[in-house]
Amino acid sequence: MFCEFCKINEANVHLIKVVNDNIEKLNLCVDCLKNINFFPEEDFFNDLTKILSKIFEVDIKIIDKSENSKLFDFSNGVENKKCSFCGIDLNTIKAIGKVGCANCYREFKDVFIPIIKAIHGSTEHRGRIPLQSSKKIKIENELKDLKYRLKEEITVENFEEAARLRDTIKKLQKKLYLVKKMK
Image (cartoon, rainbow, N blue to C red; front, side):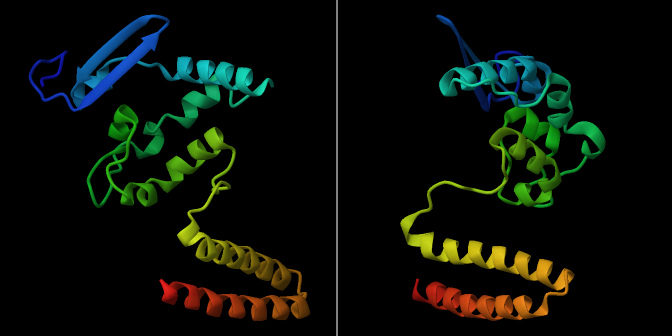
């Protein structure tokens, strides 16, 4: 299937926009997608805020429009940065709404973290954990918290508590090793 705009490149992005009873379908190539204003960011955030406030019956204020435009403007200083693994750049990620590979999350971490935090309110997963991994993940999370507390205790020179935390961390690391070995 060819792009509906340029009619030259293969359409690898398929968009469906539903407004009231009107359904608009577009099959585009990545190049044409960059040039079309199919779903403006400002409208998305205004509509999302209205939907969420109706669902939760509260006045939700995510971020004002000027902040949204700054937050989702990938071109501020990193426009030419590309993923070292798959070669995708930030403008393409913004255009298609998907990363190219798992490495993109590490490569563009500094750009994605503020966006994720603005949308979800946190950068840490707080939901369900798959049953097979739950024990391992719980131990890893506890270790992460204990290591953070250990650094704090050392900073304030509370060495007795730091020693206790160090011992607890060692026990949990052994437990984690055994849990990983069992799988």
